[in-house]
Structure formats: C-alpha cells, structure tokens
Image 1 (cartoon, rainbow, N blue to C red):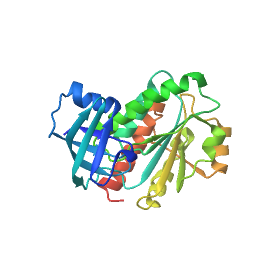
Image 2 (image 1 turned 90 degrees about the horizontal axis):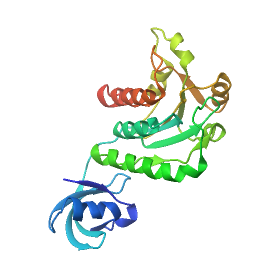
Image 3 (image 1 turned 90 degrees about the vertical axis):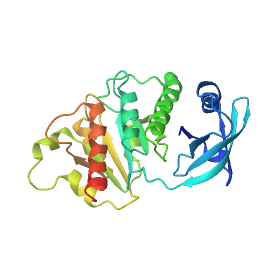
Image 4 (image 1 turned 30 degrees about the vertical axis):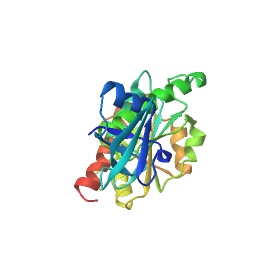
Length: 251
C-alpha cells in the first residue's frame, strides 16, 4: 500500500484528509479509485490503514479502518547535527539519515565551513530538503517524520538539548584501544526513548577551539573508527552503529 505523511491535525479518531501533492499523486498519478486503501501516518508515531471515500479537487477524504502497531523506529531518539557540506551532499545526509532512523537534523555553520551560507536561499533549500526527508520516510516505512531545524551557528548548536551529546573528533581516532570507546560507553549509558545528539563537522572538520567549546557545553568527543570519514559518510556510520547496537545486539 502507498504510504503518506499527513499533518497531525488532518486526523480525527475515524477520519483523515489527504491534501496537496499527496492528493494529486493519489488522483492523477496513481489514479486510485474510491474504496482503495492507503497507509496514513501523522509523523509522530501513529499509522493507520485508510479507505478512500471521497475526492475533491486536491483533497482526498478517507475513513480509518485499522490502527497499525508498527515498530519501525530506533529505540533511542537520534539528532544529527551536520556542518553544512558542499554541493548536494546535505541532500544525501538527509535522505540516508532518514532511512537509518534519525528523528531530527540540525544543519549548522562553523569556522571551517567551506559553504557560504546564503540566508536568502534557505527557504528554497528547506523546501527541497523537507521533500527529500518525507519521501525517504515514506520509502522506508517510518512512523516518525524527522524534524528539520533551521540552520544554526556553532554557538546555537552548543545549546542543543539532549540526554547525551557527542561530537565526532578526528583526533580521537588515534586514541582507540582495546577498551570500549567513548562512543560505546555513551551508547551503554542510554536508556530507551532517551535523546542522543551527535555533531559532525563539515569538510574542514571542527577546529580545536570548537571542539573545546563544545566540550564546555556538554559534548563528549568520540571517534568514528580508525579511518577519517567524509562528512556525508559520518552520520551514516553513527546511525548504523546505533541501529546495530540497540536492534541487533540488544544494547
């Protein structure tokens, strides 16, 4: 069945309403008929099977026939704070990060950021980024639609609230030993439903001053293995490791 994310206020106990591009997709692209069924999600954990009951222009009315008990989300909530990368790499980070279970993305600019942030273009970029997130969430049958934060500064990033805050630090890769890493120790300390935030620098990485600054605001420097990863790869490493630890190892 096709899956669509709807705003929470488009749901009532027994009905839901699909509008905009999704309604156009149902009527004009998929050419569905009344009586067919789709899955509708409110982006905050609720998923239902809904039967198409009435078409209006750019509006599809549905009757909810079944509440779904799906378990698609990571046991912990993960925010990826990503230093703005060059080109379309941010799109890759958002798409793959959504597929791998992130619940929030916080793009930021820092001292080594190569990209020149253009505030006038942010609205258009955000629209495209949110579309990428939504499509990735639908494709992977997510129940939770990840949130996309406005672009922030390193000072604003330092104020990010989470139960555990980590920052990827290249220098930590030289300190790995046979004992559990700071990353593993952090995962061991997390309980189900707690919030983990991981900051990943742009192409230039973090300056030592920024690492020190983030440490002062509760971030723990961690290694992402012995190899230096590209910025667009780092978040995938983080999310895959978290998924394996909690979902495969039962951490």
